[in-house]
Length: 289
Image (cartoon, rainbow, N blue to C red; front, side, top):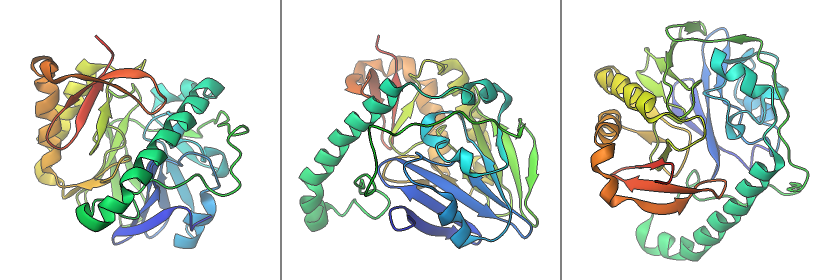
């Protein structure tokens, strides 16, 4: 169902594949093979979309193990993840977590419907990637599940993935999860940031999140901002951002303890209660204090 997903060329040989309102995957093509960063929600197959864009062999790399990034892993023969994510991929998310996600997404759709006309007339913030899409026709929400997957191999910090004429460097960036990684394409300068950077809430509240690790990872990415031309992200309305966001995120994590007077209590994507601290271009969520 290519028509349900939004496919957008970003640079030569690079496409965003967006499940609008949910997650964005990134297809990066070299001369010898292609790399798909993450495989989405698993609502409908993603491989047919990829095959329209490239006939080359496809390597899947998971930015981390969360269910919204691995739902199509089973469609591909070669899947890689950081070693810390291998055991986590071996388990399916509990049905309660998936049901909680769908219930919260119902609220997202209702909110979008309430402002869409005003947005189209006056604000012009929604586009094909940012306007939350209804669940695909025929989707069985009661039967939706994401099975375990077994990666063929692992990737670690400093590994270089040669696609033929394009080499991606792996950066281990724990914080959101212990297995979180980013990919840097030195030929274009694009940084594929997974859930380490976001234009909406940056989730530092998950059970396996670590704020100290997140702070260090954000500082590392900020230090390389002069070598980054564009930041490609996984979630929310703006899936690309200029390199300055790396320094902004690093500064926010460094100042997080001093910004808690701005905290508000909200729900995350599965309906759990979290604390959110808002900054100019994003927010950071932490466990309730």
